[in-house]
Image (cartoon, rainbow, N blue to C red; front, side, top):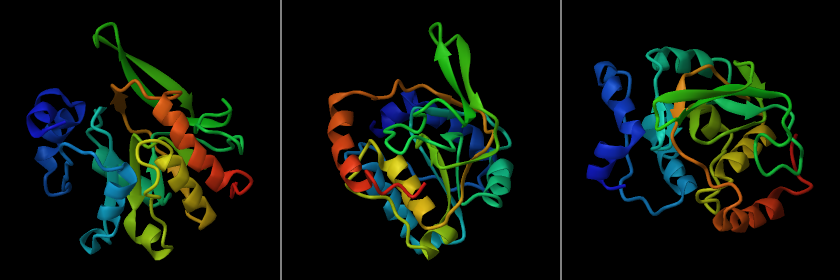
Length: 215
């Protein structure tokens, strides 16, 4: 989205407006008119030395965060885990191409709008907080110091699909802890599972990790 569309349409913009009252706790960076892969954008911020002692929260623009205790929860969560999400799985199939394959040992909850957005339907995956191996990239908080000390970054070849799963596998491989935390979020996106782009991006993901899962 461009700046005007983001302010008029993006659920995330509503979140940022609500967080202005806590401006001393949050520093926001919005990428308008984005054509770059998410891995490239996220690495750009991980590599910025001014964030070394901070928590970086990567969020999609179709996400509405309705949790007034966001800062408190993130600080509490990051004391227990190095990477934090809102939905994930602990024991995925090693051939999984989604964090919820198969449907067992899952964690977290995500709200989804229905009935012309008049009703929010909550998908409850499992108990949270919980340690996970994979989390969904729509909401991903990172302890920058811990991640950088182990040299873990996003793989730039994964632009809009599999960047999150790949990052999680790299974190696990390097001994970092991943987990979910109960943070109230509504996701307005429909996802792109099974799309042509998703299928194309699954090829390098398989080539990189098939038979090499650190789980």
